[in-house]
Length: 449
Ligand code: BGC
Image 1 (cartoon, protein in one colour):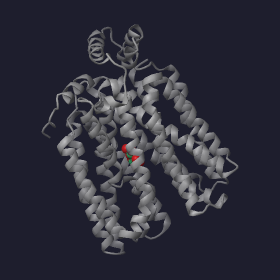
Image 2 (cartoon, protein in one colour):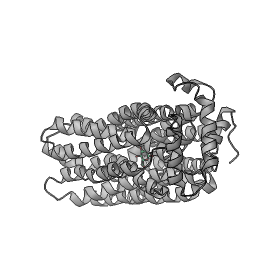
Image 3 (cartoon, helix red, strand yellow):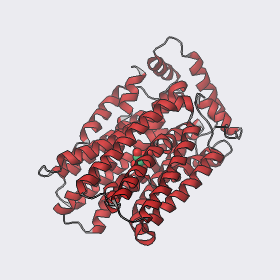
Image 4 (cartoon, protein in one colour):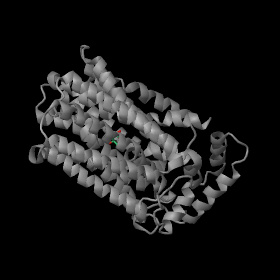
């Protein structure tokens, strides 16, 4: 089993995350006709996935710590497949909502467990790229969902196919995971040393894994004295990672990314970009920028470092949000429509090079092993909870503050995110997870960027 196989299979979790969150924007147009949905019911059909994800993320860490990463990912794959099948066949609205809740649960667990598993399997020197493969798959999944929605729009009962297509990656993920090894770190933590060694051997493909094994063992011995408990997250060594993880989780959402991902066509139309098809095409363009800039981030991550990319990305987002606010304040015109499209693309680019991949990467790196599952859970719950909150209040915000005011608010929040990252986020490039743990326990000041 080569490590590349692990990365290829496990990152399907990210693909499903992206596909299943993106697909509903197009599918909803048809679902609302078939089931005669009121606006409230439309909100529930969309929001139930985010609520399910918040719940899934809450339990994912404990389950992964108890049953192992591999088994929980297999269970997630079953949930994804079941949810896709049930959505495609749903004959009543409550079945569809149930199916979407199941998919939401799966997304929530997958969103924390995929990066966690990848981080624990990857060698230190390319861990950044490997874990960020997950974010690439999220963005690719979102783009794929736009394309599938567009392609199936004219097909009879197309929405059933749109939601049902998720069955394919779900089944591949489940079957693929059966062939992959369990995380060596988790096995060692359970005292299954021989299995851990065998897993490391098959992952690294070289004869000698003794140095890596010894480092893992030493790290575990230091912590293994007690069973993990939630209260341990507030101890020295875990507290700072918790503040960084939850802070970045919230900033990743309250700076507005999903208002763009979920409502891009509407925003473009408001800005005066004319026809619906022009707006949809512009949105697909946003999806492409998201993917391309994520690829660039992956290439740079292990060289330029996480901190520098994060700060640059946040700075770009702040400036482009200000431009957007200005463009909306200027009213509707063709020129402003183009300014809006350009600024939105640059804003998504800024997110994709920084906060998008780096939030998920950092939360997989910074928590001490003993509470890694739980710590990632808390950060992921904060992420989905904030996503849900922003999605629910966004349309009201627009009504209250107008588009210009709303984007100005996002700009202010992004500047706050920049200050937060500047003050607290450490550089983790090229360090082993064990070294990062030691750095943060010692109250490491952020490395100069
Ligand atoms: C975020 C998602 C977002 C996606 C966009 C992810 O990192 O967690 O909420 O939809 O990036 O690319």
